[in-house]
Image (tube, rainbow, N blue to C red; front, side, top):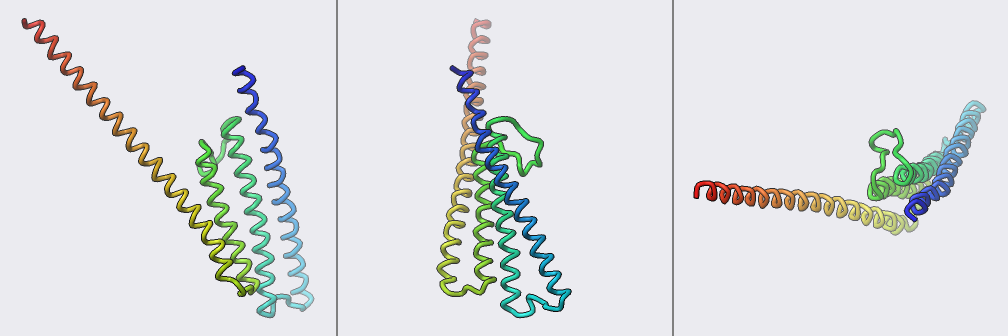
Length: 195
């Protein structure tokens, strides 16, 4: 039974493959579209059309580039999730330390960080487009989840740190008790030898 249960961990390869393919699709298609957008802008400048000469045109161009950044960030979330699941269930990978995942908490923390950036990029896109109507509500709707996620990460780190301190204190206490018991046993042995 344990062999069967151990082998089921390889089922995670199916969603990992899907996540990595989706991330690759976001990176490749987004990169090609961004390069095409930049070429189109360059041709416009060379023909003298000068797109982006008006203030609203600049906002639209900036928004379009920010949308590609958003696409790449979503691809990054998918990639980090896929690579993290692989590291958790299959085997460690030779990644930089910041991308090594040793627990589900680390995976969640990485995802929360990237998610906060994606939400901020969404808000920036609205600002660059000049969508000032309901901007405060939109900003608050983005800021509240970011604040809640930050609080979640902070409380989790605090509880882990507190748990480590408590475990270390308990270990030191147990060592003191063991040392005291050894001392008492040694004293009793000396008393028996003397008597």
